[in-house]
Image 1 (cartoon, rainbow, N blue to C red):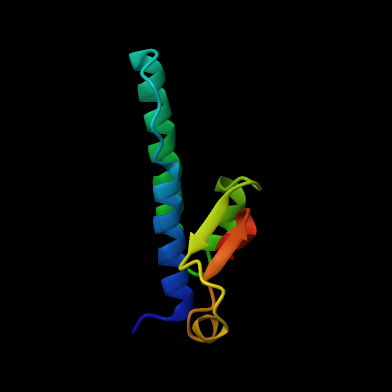
Image 2: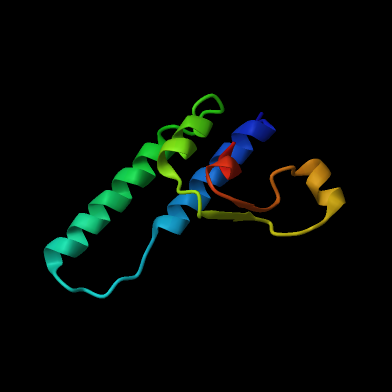
Length: 96
């Protein structure tokens, strides 16, 4: 059975990976490869730390304060009762 904390961790990891994906013009092949390797490294680090006791520390280490996390972006009190992580949150605190 999946707990709310595990679901929140998984949703947070998926959101982080989706937010890392960038479209950039190819200025130089090596620059693009470096950026891709860095993005992959961050995504892999976050995904390897999605356990409830690790996700908060990973978010503090990997997420900038201006990052935005959006999950089922509804201002719906009934929905929030059963899915407490719904809504829009900013910074590393969004993943804790």
